[in-house]
Length: 396
Image (cartoon, rainbow, N blue to C red; front, side):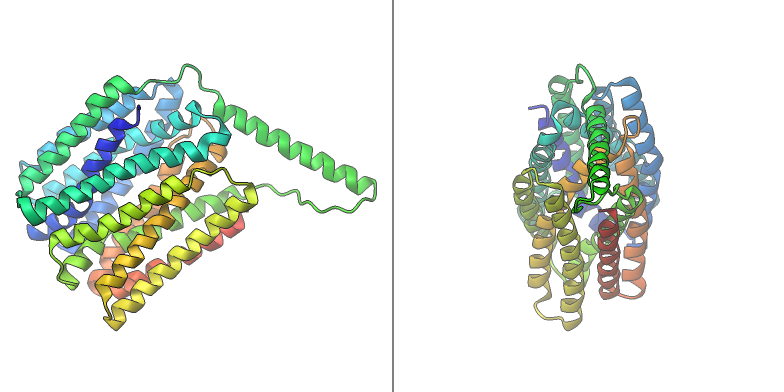
């Protein structure tokens, strides 16, 4: 029940995700402006994630930072309605990213502490599935606004602001801090004991001259971190300029652009509700690698269909749908793994790694699309996904 506020928050950002790039273009901005805006916002969120992750674990108070995030975002989105200057909007968006970051680490910790490790995949999948419904609702609202209602930009931004304020009110009454914060510590102790036991068993078999069929290997945390950053880097190269690709290159009306993103979000929702099953380590490892490989292949296929100009809109919609499904499985896996690897007091590290890769990708994607063309942006994304796949192979 406490997740309900997050649903309305995601509804606002689902609507904003397509609207804002197209709005920037409509008031005289460019692809580079969109890239600079997303890059700067992602860059600003890096220290913010560190700070919010540290302070929420330090105080062991999580609700207050979630409330701060939703309320401040609501106010800042209202300020968007007071100016149509591109530079002002970029500055406001950067400030939004700082306060938007305040709810991410607390949310991840709440789920980790409210459930046991065996339930983490199911709990994260349930949360992400419900909030993806909010994102999907925001995209459907965009279809209604731009196909039937013909609301102006100010009204659209007010809807986003109001949805965040509703998220604040619901979270005020529904979200509660955990009584004790112990689950992540217990998981780390359990992993250490398991590793020592495995080592003792291996040593005993070697001393007794028995055949050994197990390997004693610690996870490569640095490879996992590089995998996270590269995946986020590739994703933002691909997705940051994508609304403009559909709107300008393929000449699709705005409501059709929203419809394409609806298919992506709907597949993502289905993926989240199928991702809750707890897998054995080998199965989870294999699934994660296959997902990243699949995203690479899909990005390269998108580049191919763009070059051929063969039913590009149809195939791009299909590719985005498959990407949405794959992303849901990926996100649940890496969230659960990161809560195992990242110690208490550093809950924001996961979001920091994602932001670092995302910031660079958010700038490079629009830059490449504007200077070399969208085909090269898609090729760059496919190559970056391959590098992420290689990093996750090294992690295990």
